[in-house]
Length: 386
Picture 1 (cartoon, rainbow, N blue to C red):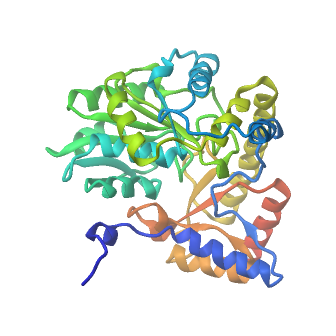
Picture 2 (spheres, rainbow, N blue to C red):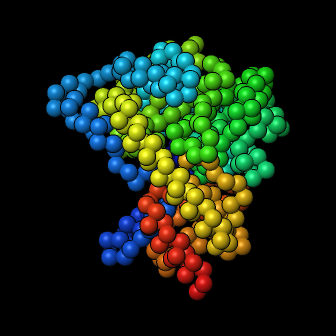
Picture 3 (cartoon, rainbow, N blue to C red):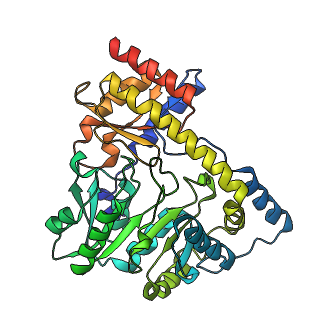
C-alpha cells in the first residue's frame, strides 16, 4: 500500500533549502558563509510594526477575525493602492491571507478544475506550478528568455494557449530574474487572456522594490484579474506570514467561503501589526531599505558580469540576479555545491526555477549587506582562479 497521493510525485522540494541547511551546518562548525541564496530581506521588521504587534498582544485581544481579514487592514491596503499607485480599489475586493502562498492556494482552488491548465513563465518561482498541481491542474511552463525580459508576452500566451487553458500567472517584478512587465505589455497580456476566455493572475509580491522607475500595479488596467501581494518582501515581515489578494468582485464570495474552511483567518496578531506598516514613519524606513537594495544591485550586477557571468537583462526590481554560468561550468548545481564548500558562498542553482536551461543558471540574492557582498565577490573570484 502506498498512502501518498499521486500528485506528490510531481511536487519537487525546494533545492535551495538543502543548500541552506548545509550552509548552516558549516556555520555551526565555525565556517564563514556569505548568504546569497535565500530570498529573505536581511532587515528586521520595522520597529513601529513590532510595537503595534506588541501592543495588541499585551491587550490580549487576539481572537478570530473575519475570513477576509480585519476591515481596518483591508481598508489600509486599499488606501495604499490609492496613495502609492493612484489606483482606487474597493476594500471589499481585498482578502487578507496567510502569506501570499495562502492567496495562491485560494485562487487556484476557486478557479482551476482538474485537468485545466495554467500558463507560467519558465524560469519562474517553483511554488507557483506546485499550487496548480495541488488542485490537479496542469502547469504549462512556457520558456522565456532575454528577448522578452524573461517574461510572458501576449504573443507567447497566444502561441502556448490550449483548449484546456484556464489562466495565466505572471510575476512583475519576477523571481528569479527581477524583471518587470512593461505597462503596455501588461495591457496586451490582459486583453489577450480575456479574449481567449481565461483569467490573468499577477504576482506583485515585490511591488515596492522597483529601482529605475515608478512602480505600478496591474489593477490600473482592469478589475477582472487577480493580484497577489505580501507583507514579506517590501514590508520586511517574512515570519509574520501575511499577504493579500485583490479579486474580481464576483469571485469574492467563493474565495471567502473557501477561506473560512481552509484557514478561518490569517493570524490575528500579524494583521494588527500590519496596520502599523502604512504609516509615514514606516514608509520612510522602507524607502531607505529600497535604496540600500538598489545600491547592492548596482554593485553586484557589474561585478558578476566582470567575473564572466552572463546577465543580459538588467533587473529592475526584487533583489535577485539570474546569471548564466555556461562559460564557467557545465552543471550549476555542482557549481553551487563547490562554491559553498570551497569558498563559503551560498547561491541557488537554476534547478529550483524550472526546466529552461537550469543547469546553466544561478540565482544570486542581494539580501545581505554591501560589505558582505563585496567579500562574496572576492571569494568567487578566488574560486574561479583556482
